Image (tube, rainbow, N blue to C red; front, side, top):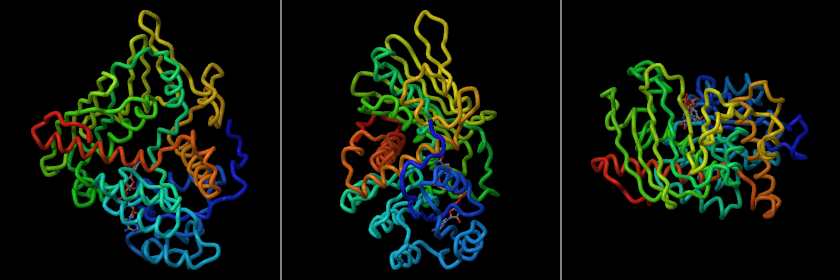
Length: 390
Ligand code: NAD
């Protein structure tokens, strides 16, 4: 149970690139990073518009001298200070992630980066290698992967309660972009332009979330090959997709499917992961994140509730309030940021023992998401053919 006791005896000096006052995702970064006292916001280049970024930083209580016009000035100036930042979060559109992450690592900073980590596997590999060389980490914000019930599912699968894993069905399919909302929504505009979003829209923006949740639940499964069909129902989005189906085959003989969509009219989110084994199935849905369905063949459905003592200890250690009260996205993110801080601190201390079995979405998880999108696009653009996962 998390009760406010700081997990570290220090708070990392932390800054942000992006996540400005008009952004969609900046606030959850700040509230999650600062929730357990592991990060203190001291600087930033919060906005593409330098003055707006400065005004916003000031309104957050950041020293105006440390609200910078761009990330290059930010990293260079902070490096000169004895109290300069130790870690930075990158919450900008996708096309900037690679350059900002690389510059941050080269400046000796730990990084938290938004998904998708970058545009292609080559870039992701450069970042992974750079992390190793600089002895710094990149944490990737696959937010709901920090939810306790995802880890309950992981433990149940590891204990064999489902039997052999046969099928994984994943979806993240909402209806918010069923029309061309990008015409007057700046946060959506860059998402449907390949120069800013990368080779896919919903594949990277949405599908990488349930994909990583499934990888967290069943880490021993590896994708062997896949087939993707993608569509642009709002025609102006072509060649980018606003809907896609992906079929996957895993190396243990299991099969999987992904449906990602921004045109699923009426659906709020529809992020679901269902893992089906030879004895039982589990299902988690982000619209009811405190309940995990456990369905044993031939028995009544069991609904496992977050915060209850019958859960695995790993699924209880990050509870912030007892069962019955809802926890959701903000708490899952806080769990991730808490883990990022612990991993950063352990990396700085060279604590290999702690890091060996310490779970968090790391740079490799970021790389796998990028690789998956790349393979999906390769398949879709060659007539929805099966491609070896490479
Ligand atoms: P947004 O367009 O709403 O906001 C982007 C912010 O970045 C703005 O404040 C903008 O001024 C700033 N910015 C842009 N370029 C910059 C630069 N070069 N330097 C400094 N600031 C810059 O975008 P968003 O929806 O907040 O998405 C940002 C990132 O977060 C994307 O990579 C997106 O995929 C990701 N995201 C992740 C989740 C999640 O659940 N993990 C949810 C939403 C968005």
